[in-house]
Length: 462
Image 1 (cartoon, rainbow, N blue to C red):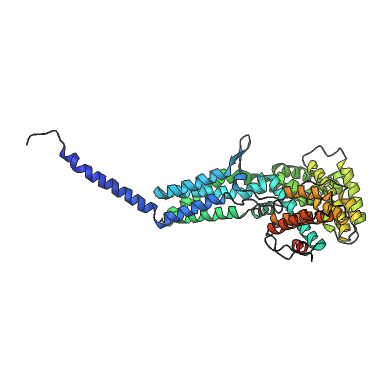
Image 2: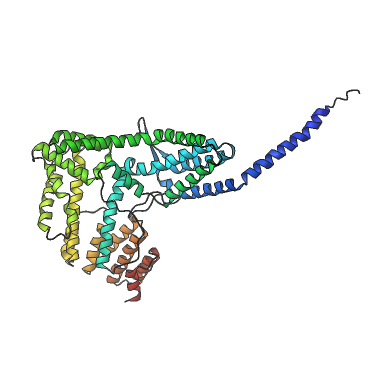
């Protein structure tokens, strides 16, 4: 048969290749629309939405989402901040896509996402010192505010949004526990979705391969990401334990040196009153009772003794000693003395506040107002709430209105803002601004979805 220039074998194989390609596409489509893949996509969407939710919560302030929480990593020349939300989204999205082709790659990516999630409470307790300082301070302020509102106004039996009070910490375990107590619902949803995705990627694997792939990935990522901050935290705890032993044996100089190393490695200790109390005692032992900061140890518990009998004389003596500390010039030598002086200044303000609260409890508002005015609270402190209420109780509500409005702008918790707006309504009522008062009471009820009995009583005139 003569050759006509046409290859019949290519003609025969072309349809077969087309059929094979079509079969591969259909198989891939069926795999993509299978139940596990659809559920994985659902978990992926849930994880992406979780980054917009609450990842870090505070007793008074507004919560932070994953977009507000930078990823802090220790670099050679300091701490590097990266966008945590974007990295988490890429890891989870990459894991879902990789699970279609290689479940081993998916497990590695999910392990990285879990380590990233574990870094959030760690940096909340250790790397980002301002967060743990804010949480500890606001926990105390929130508890005092709740007791004050129930005592001076109508008792509100409706439950407030739950939070875990953290008034102080001393060791690394307690510090990390505060970091985990700060986590919000968005973080927990992210943890749950990544865990579910990881378990789905394990389906059908041999047990040994499954274990080593996941455990190895967690170990590697954990050492790279969690290792440096955890190592520094544990080293600071070791220095603190060494200082405790030296202080117990009466070696003040060695205790001061160990505590100085501890606070340099773990700056969050400057917010730990038990630690600062021991540091003050170490200075006292080192100087034979002559160091100006040695008196701080005996005054640190006075602010918590409000209501324990007549403590006015104790307050006066403590304030005099603390005033001397704040105006001394012998504390600028070491990094351990500066936090003690800052604590002395905070404590002096707390003692004036505690005395004012005690006087307000006895309905002695003119004297309470005088005590409040003796210190300058932070603009976001609820101490301005007590000052405003004293003005209202004395019938001079005009100064209270700007104080409460500024406090409302800085506070993020709806239940606390509800009390602020209800008090604003009281101030407007005292100033004969009836329309503004009713607007404030209505806003109070909108913020507090459960019945706020203060607003209800004011609106109904009962």
